[in-house]
Length: 257
Image 1 (cartoon, rainbow, N blue to C red):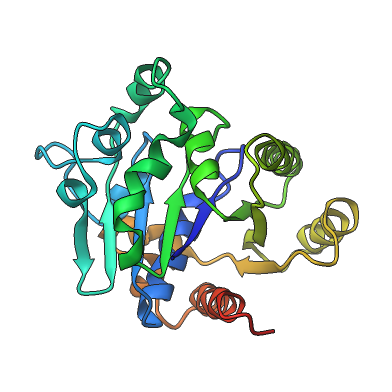
Image 2 (cartoon, helix red, strand yellow):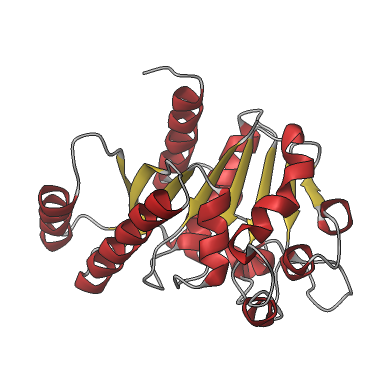
């Protein structure tokens, strides 16, 4: 069975899509069979790969509402290991259409069940909210990656996200783990380093794995060239950290220290 990891933070603008895309690509580069799902109606992960949202291809919307099966919406982007399911603005409607569905919070889990044997990792790029789409991601997931930016509202978003995960664990008999906290787009300023220290002291315990992803302008402009940052700037410091994160996930997946 694959590890299913949701990349999530209630706060927007923290780089969730950047972290989801680049972590998934690095896992595939390490020889893992990876499926990345774009669950954000903004479709930023879809745009990163230069995919057209108006060509009639199936999306996560069709998968969630049961209109199409997994095999009808999945695309092989980097053969043979990296697969992708794109998103568009129709996902906004999915939250409304699922309201009347029995066990609506498990729609994604049911949709992914037939394909799980084909992957080592499934990465879910979540929207910046704690609505039904994110609830579906958490019910399907066994772990989360939480990107954080070095500013107050991001800290508040982390707390809300952490509390939501605890509620999901309690109400759905889950054991979702926090696989990594990513301090994203960090420069070397003293203020940001002080923020990270305060964040760790106030909100994290010793068992949580933290990573600092340095600011890299090349990673930020990569989507405009329809490439993940780790492909556009393969020798950058941010790329190195995403590679190290992928190796960490591999080690923990295999029960290594």
